Length: 410
Image (cartoon, rainbow, N blue to C red; front, side, top):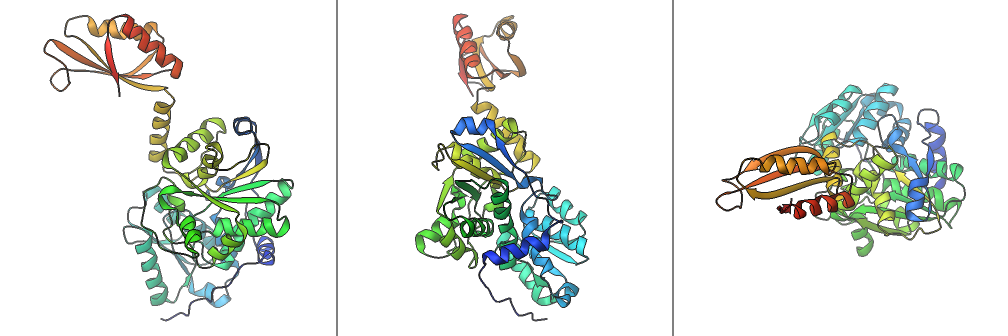
């Protein structure tokens, strides 16, 4: 069945105000909590807009619900379809189920099982197709035409953008004297909607969008004067790994967003860990880019009142585990040493006893002869150690040297 596509239209401040009235009561007004730790670290007054606390773990609920509430009775009866690898799928599935609208979500086949299960748990039909978002998107469009469903775009839709813009209205009420608002940028729906709400109310507020450097499609669009498709890139900020920004979102971002900056993978990982440890807040890579930008001085926030939009918290636990481990290594709290010793009885106990004297917790120890770069009559002891940080590591190294042990790190 052929279904004519919706005509693209822009988004106005009035659209965002109407969206807020539609979704009021069904969407959590997320806190905008001030962080003393991050304020001291950055020299700014930093507040965190905690969209990771939404029911399905991200801001996507706002746009998905607003779009569902603008469906005609006939469109509701047909049902909706969308492509997503995570947050949009869960948000649309959850609110469609609440409203009695059937939902079909096409997700790439490598999508983590936890995200697929969560989407199904909300009552949606899940179709696994393609190896990436682009291929899933093509299949969703095919299903739309074949079954006469209504397509709900994850970002390039005026009603979706207006829903995301309600975050801006909440920020203005929660912290009316803001100087800077920092938000992540993927396809541009969040940044465009929030910036429109803020700038139409107070043009003096500076709005900065942050992308992962590996997939900086909005920065490229601004450089070229319009949306272009960029090569795929690997990033832990998978929620904003969009190769081409939207035709509806781009004019909004170009008009209202003051600047676009990028951050690298190590900076994103460190920001995730900083939020976990310092703020006791689990945030996915796409949400943590905003903190990464101010901590790494991509934005001048010294002495400013700043709000960071933490857009979501749906991070895969395996990824989180790797980030924590790498962060511990970077901070010197997890250390691996390869200690070379004569292959004689008692040397292993001498090394481990020395670690005990230095207050080190040994997590793992192994002995290598044949597969280590050692001479005949020598052996290598590989130690994985839990330490108190850089100064403790220096003390451990000094103790080994003072006892005649040679070693390498890693």
